[in-house]
Length: 189
Image (cartoon, rainbow, N blue to C red):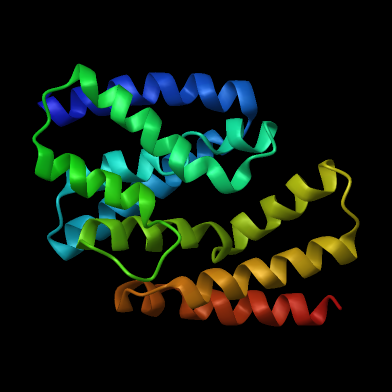
């Protein structure tokens, strides 16, 4: 096991505790986004270790932030967590800077490195895959939303994530999904 794998393993242990405590993000989303990000990193010759850590850290404090009604602060909370977490590991400053960029820039379209662009694009898959949209319906329905509200949220999320994609490889892969999801949502009106 190499050094990054050790850090990832340690981070996963902490993340699973956070996910079990707050329920957000789901463990499936946490793992799926990382998997997608790593696959994109391989295709883009990006630093896989940076992408692994960045994708895992970008939402590590989302559940806590939501429970404290501080959703907009989850990025800063994640950066603070990562800074403290990395005190236990002698990572070089260039790698840490890229990982922090992945966390800080995961909602942006202006990226300081390919790794942060990959992480931002990977998280868009959550709303651009039919299976994930169906799970979103279940999630919101279980929280008391009615179907009209859910369709509105789904439409907004699908468009938002489609418009946030910046990598051609992602747009090409997801274009058919986007069209079919939009058609489905339109038929359901």
